Image (cartoon, rainbow, N blue to C red; front, side, top):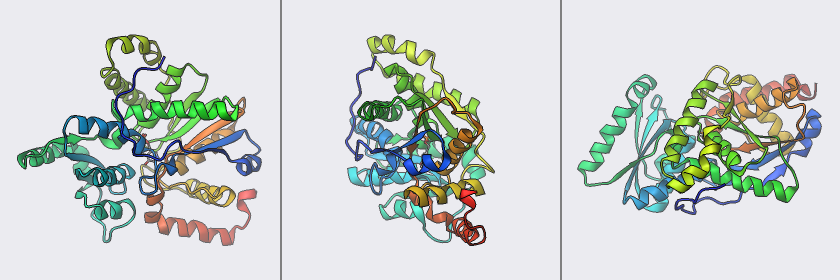
Amino acid sequence: MLPRFPSKLSLASLPSPLRPLSRLSAHIGGPRIWLKSDDLSGSTLSGNKVRKLEFTLAAALEAGCDTLITCGGLQSNHCRATAILAARLGLKVHLILRGDPPDHLDGNHLLDALVGAQISIYPAKQYHHELDALFEHWQQHYQNLGSKVWCVPTGASDGWGLWGYLNASIELQNDFERHGIEPEYVICATGSGGTQAGLSLGFALQQTSTQVLGMAVCDDAAYFKNKAEHDIREWAALLDRDDYARCAPAFENLNVQTNDAYIGPGYARAYPEALETIKLLARLEGEILDPVYTSKAFYGMLNEIKKGSFEHCSDLVFVHTGGIFGVFPFRDELQRTLNQNALFTGVENA
Ligand SMILES: *Cc1c(COP(=O)(O)O)cnc(C)c1O
């Protein structure tokens, strides 16, 4: 029941690997946990945003745009992926970033600057109150210079970006068939909602039994239900009449599942259990999670396994959505976590 796909650029290194985390599963005595390594979607493009941008930027080019404007936190993985892709495609890019101007360039922000993105940084309060106006201001600025602008919303989560993880759900279904598994859940970190919404929609359209659980890193479950419905309406409006009619039963009854219990003190604010989870995965499996997204989602999954929420499950798939460059700005917190290891040796096995 899949609709015809719109045009897409080939920008990501895909398909990404799916592999079982056998030592982790043995360590926790739980179900089989598989890692879908979307952190390998590209070296500097690492992460989930490039899957969405393959569709978004195809639409932007088709519309004749030569300039991209997008937004996010100072260490936004999405802004970094957009900035690098703009350089690859020969487009201009302006980033509207949220935060305080840092003393030095680091992580994603450093890469943004290297590839020549124009960067404006706004205090969080102003950013939250004036984001629409800031987009309009910069759009007008570039239009006055004779440019044609495409505005990409936060995380590229919109009707175009949704195709990226709808497409990924098909790739995952092929992975499952190759490995002979029928996972009960696919689990991902959820920030702007597009990854979760695209996967949820994709498995519903494929009519498989796999469910999608988003682990929120900001905002609550009600927010993400609304956000998914909004993005899917926008996506559906791009379908032709036949596809719309065929797909409607799947998206009209879509079950958007979000767990919002693992946000901790707030977006991009690390907490001890998440940092410990980074250490655990690094040592047991040689996989590096990030402090903002994947470690909170992974910790949430492990804790829900412990609580028995997945008791009936044989296979869980965790989507590694990237974030490697966001690790480095957390050097102080991570160093403290590593130092504690000397004091509490073996605590992970307790
Ligand atoms: C953006 C991001 C997410 C969240 O994906 P959304 O589609 O925005 O919900 C998860 N992990 C990483 C590393 C990200 O950069």
